[in-house]
Length: 81
Image (cartoon, rainbow, N blue to C red; front, side, top):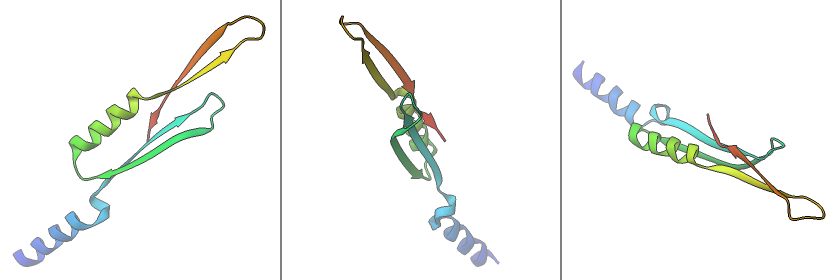
């Protein structure tokens, strides 16, 4: 019985179903995806670092008006899913 339990634990650890999958998606102002990264890990700490790094990213867009040098800046934060 102990051998079967140990075998099941080893299978669970080595299988991909035990991994946590997180994706970071950045979109432009129109909703088009400009950046997408997927992270699969078993480590909770690595997942937290990935999420923190994703939230720090943002897409920045500049619009230059005609005639003068009027520039507007739009930032769109990235999303975790």
